[in-house]
Length: 598
Image (cartoon, rainbow, N blue to C red):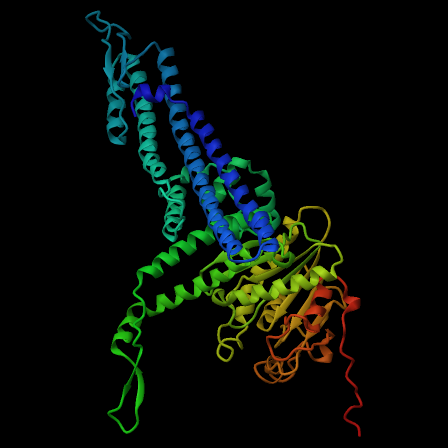
């Protein structure tokens, strides 16, 4: 960038353009939400048939388009703000150097060099030291040599001229580097000339996000930073103090970080996590599409021995060794993501409220935190912690459990608002026999769970205290117990279902008011016996035992996974607790101490 261009540049014009793109991003976001939560909902509830199904599908595609516009325009806005910030800093340096040179009566030439007049004390021959012209130097070594030469010159203006020339050269270099860096970044932020937002488009959007984030590091570091190791309340206060421009910059360039921050509003976390969700799905699907499909002839028979043996074909084994592990991982992750998308698409069915994605990641066994209804405005919050074998690939089942609970709880709440949340925020044991006996899964996940619970407090939109219930299934109850044992729960009620043990010996140790621990053990559920007689060992107390002190709710379901069967008393009892109607819960009669006497 040359001197005349930088002198004429108005960085605020780029900032104003950024405001325009940010407004477009906001409008696209609003349009997407209206399609998803109003128009599509109305069509699902009022229209039936092939035409309606096709129209709703087209609305879904339109929603994708608006979301893509939202994300890309958000990136353009942040890129322009970052360019304005960087070139503005260079312009400020240039203006200061020009003002200084003018005040010193130096002449700034069109190429940035500076001419200084004769001046200083006369030499022995009575001559005044000559003037001259110097060019700016940006190399540290060359600049040092230039300053030394100027210091030896008896003309004092030489040193001033060199200093200002160096400042001008540095400003021009910074402006040129900013221009060369951001011009291709901005050119890359454009969509295909079609109306379909493909997986490849979202994969490219993910690359765009990383590119703008890396290039805009200087600008982003100038913004208020999230508190390191801060509490959910600290996070909430940080976010509230950011300007709209700063909030948009954080969401567009670091959606993964924003989406993870407990204490931020549910609407903000949802917006950030949906960016991560769509970009991740695009990347994973694009990668999966690049892997050859597994050979159809997976099996063959070996008949050379005394008995035929079924074995994998050489062709299949070659594919498996090269692609199998990644293929399986991608397939499972995308299956789980489709389950989350199905919940998004179910909004409005039977009055189901909109969903909020409060957490998402494919790391480890995967993370997904999905709320039915906005927890920040709900009178009642119910947080479900799943157990052994839970992972992203199977999260649809856990989401459906909380969807079914919401429907019953919404009826039991008599007009009060309810939010039910699936919290898959930890790496659960994946093998009942090999992994579930180990307690480190529970203790590793306990701090994260406590932070999430505290975050629900920090993000609630008014001064009222919502009624909060924790619902823990199987090994999830072990995690909840570990959280209470090592800290606090920040809950009013705890429901345990099919628990093998909660790491504490009595209900009063679970950090909720006395009488507010509830337990369900269904007929044919083997897991509580695993706690009693298996890895628990002698003297280990499970919540189903009378000495633990929990309210034993009636169950009319069987086995380990039926506690959320639609229409069951098991589900209805949970819903009553979740909305604070514990007095209406059906309890099992206390055990008869004389039952063994004949």
